[in-house]
Length: 138
Image (cartoon, rainbow, N blue to C red; front, side, top):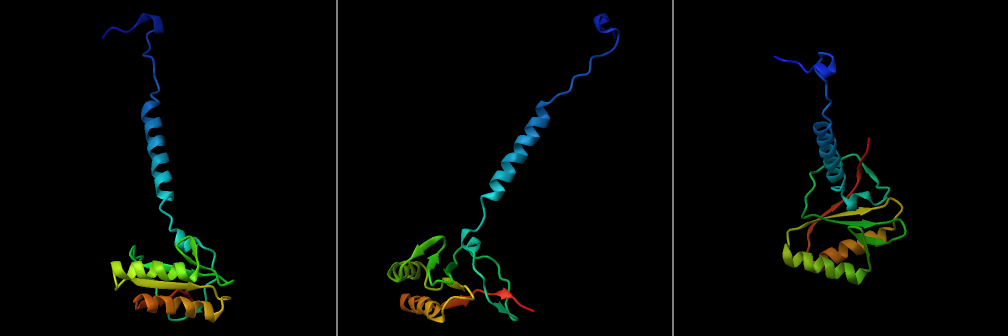
């Protein structure tokens, strides 16, 4: 094998950056996509009450999550709704699937009246599979 005499008889080392850039680019895409799958319904700042018998259940994409904040504001997902708008959304959901599950996440400072109003709206819409969101207690 004949070596190039211009380099002094040594082979020139070349650091290939292309594969490293490709890997970094793929990792960047992966982390960008992984962070966009956050669940906006569960990101609403609520101080849920504790329950000793609370169960951790799998997330159901068909499940409706209704949040009742401490001031009585009701939101479905990240959208705040009036009582009439909530009822119409629940009626549409019941028409699509009457067995759809509904979780009501009420702040521990929320008035009982606001949570009962949401439960009543679910009953009027024909949704009977209700649950109350809590955190696991001691």
